[in-house]
Amino acid sequence: MHLTRTGRILTAATATALAFTAFSVAPAFADGGDDSRGGHSVVRVHLMGSQPAPASPVIAGINPGVAPWVNDRSTARVREDGRIRVVIRGLVIPPPRGTGVNPVASVVATLVCGDTVADSTDPFALSPAGDGRTRDTIAVPEGCADPTVLIQPAANRTVYIASGMSSRDHERHDDE
Image 1 (cartoon, rainbow, N blue to C red):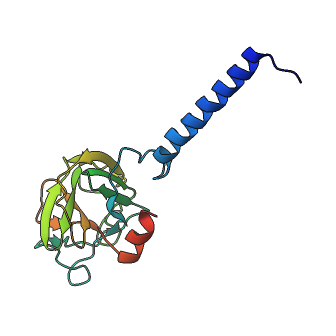
Image 2: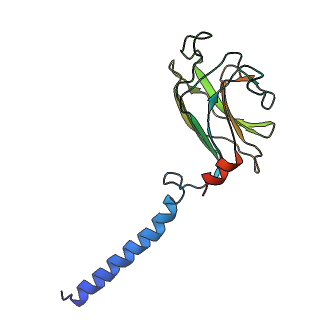
Image 3: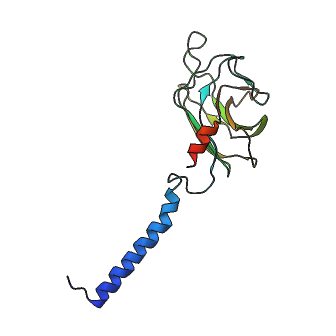
């Protein structure tokens, strides 16, 4: 196939544009696509329903709820820049202590660093089936040690009904 000078110039320009686009976009997808706005994870956890003490610990002076809570796959992720995403599925008090229906209308997600409460999300709705989600921004202290995410009833922040604690191995693989 014989290309004219104009055809060769257009082909070279197209190849250059494609290469530029590939090298510009690739870093945006390196951290998982929608995570391209920066901020490595401080913590990424699976949430577990709390159990009455002593089965679940007191965390930063906050007690576990007095009833046993269960949930389906639920997650929380907090980034260095303060973005937090929480997805809760099926967080309820099961029979015989409960009805299998969630009695809490709204919750907050609270970040704990070490033994100190760092910040909480704005309240977000939890359905009767125990489903809820939020994307918010909170204050994250630099060097947040042993990060934990608590799910607390918005109306009673002296207890938590679900939690997710950091794990060194999980964090190492999170940002690879």
